[in-house]
Length: 318
Image 1 (spheres, rainbow, N blue to C red):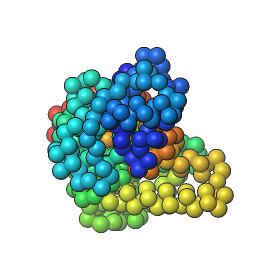
Image 2 (tube, one colour; image 1 turned 30 degrees about the vertical axis):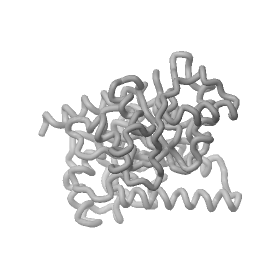
Image 3 (tube, helix red, strand yellow; image 1 turned 90 degrees about the horizontal axis):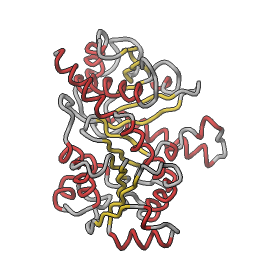
Image 4 (cartoon, helix red, strand yellow; image 1 turned 180 degrees about the vertical axis):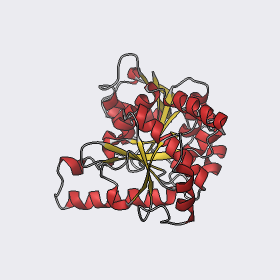
């Protein structure tokens, strides 16, 4: 498998991205190859300083850099030789099997939509996060910021996408879908949640549990939690903030440690024609390592093919 990594992506790149790539060599097989996208001189220098070997990687020279503060569409279109732009060209032409970046998330999303495009039938691609359950299981929550303003039919599709991920990546046979709301009753919530509930409650496309409240995020009531990107991002950032407070106050045990973003590496973009992972801007080397492994696991699970097949059935049923 050929795994693409944006070396210049992230607040602490290229140091941590190179460190993460070197660490990943111990986790991947001899059949895997990591492609490093970025300025060749910088990559070569950092590999030397970090004790890496250029022969262990395929280096793809990309002289331009998209900064974290650049406007996504403008940056992607005006910097065709950036690590993100070139990475997606390689992914589109199948010179690599997956692509991961902890850089400008907007530019990465634009790159995915412009180059490899949405899977047929998917209205909006989505990003997700993993939430640990108290019983040791895992919840999937989506969307977490990609789509702040959406309509009920998009929430409905998020339920489909999240169920596919939960089933084929996390191994949950029949994922239960919960709609994040301010109450369990059907009539609760804003117009978006009320309309989405009516669409979801009799669905044959997924196993709808009903509304789920914020206090139940870590319980075993559902396996897939669906919400708009505005709400999801606020929830995610609040969880990250609470985790930092607990670490600072030395109140961490095995369960609390599962909330460390480094354990998961990043978020896959669900609904596009390829295996793409967006990492956290503050990613450490450990987070980069897990981002690389996540992109590999998603491709090996043939997630894109499974979404295509299920979305095709969804389109035909409408």
